[in-house]
Length: 233
Length: 330
Image 1 (cartoon, rainbow over the protein chains, first blue to last red):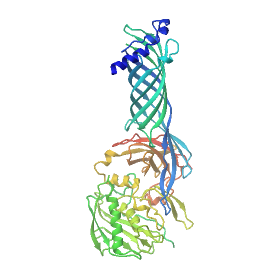
Image 2: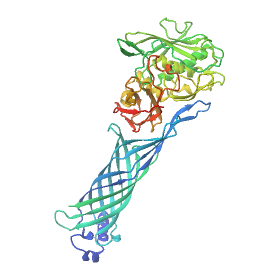
Image 3: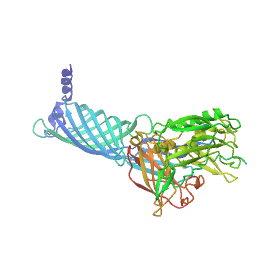
Image 4: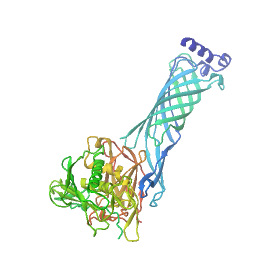
């Protein structure tokens, strides 16, 4: 059953022979090799996200139990550049699985306001080392191919988030779920040879992070944009 | 004269604070020695006097609940043993630790006090006595009595002294027309000024109290599970002594505080949850400075409340990096 499915998908991915024949053979997305291993390195930007708020409270001198706010604090992850490396395996023309690691160093920015004794508002910061180890499945959308070399794709996956607080003494763990899409632009695609493919790739992903550094319940959304260079063997 | 809720620690050995939370110390050959009980359980007796509205049995039960509250701190190893009622008076040097009422109408601002007999060589507490002033109206009503102070709440504070803890400055006050101070809010049972009549909030220990007693009597996991923030407070490059430093852990809402204890403005706050903390430095102006430090200690209160611009990470089982908070004059 699965073999039949794979064959069917391969057939779908190769169902544009006219376009393939009209492209230069060394850079045809339609001729990208099967069962290739690709390596991908690049960088991008991860959007910031709200972490949550929490007041520093004392107990008010009142009969009912009431909080007395000493000051208010609201924290967020600031946008940060990220670098990544991925390894991918195309088991059909349409589907690729990939796994990788991403490193970023976002700042946690905590806005402190409303001090009970009138202290000036400030923003306290901390830089975090964030590592994401993830795996995704990519589906190439050959039917939406643009020109001869540009193929859009959609992707979805999940991963593990490891965050080290400043000083690298406290580690937080979380999970990441992501979905998005992008395009791959082939500079080289050929069925044989040592380097069988090469190109550029752009990604946009919506990421939901659960756990890790968090001040509020529920997953926290981020948007990640990246670009990379890939080579296939 | 209306009684003000000043729960003073008449600690015979109160000299210089050693660490955050102001542990009581004595000085020997220039070295500070922390006062603490050498062994557990600590035996205590209840005075057999009653006070208007509170029988001796009710008093004993309320004080026993307060001892149990301290004993229940999971990260501290101290325990107590109630021996029985006694006709002995608090503050008699008789080798037994007594908690009881005494009629002190001349001390109309003092709810209670704690005194020690200590071994000045080792810092071991030999005897500690607590009195509650029966000239002030008291209650042991489960929900409090609006006309009286709560025995259990004040006993919980005094037992903190009994254990060797000094006062916490985690609170806000305002000046009263009669010259005293009224509590607006408090974040610690060990704050020197009690809540008003009828309030029972101080029957529950706060994170600052838990950190203090756990630092003094740590159980096996306390040091491993918590961290220490350490740093300096400076003004114009010079250390600020007697500054109050608050560490707020946003993820848990825990507020724990300490003081700068030397001329360099150095401080360390133990018992912090692992992770980042907001650091706030304030002058010690919400109570008489002698509630915290000896008269000889030059306490600087001439600076503005200041937040550190970095979040400070307390590691589990260790000390964070040193940092400095620079404050500016008022």
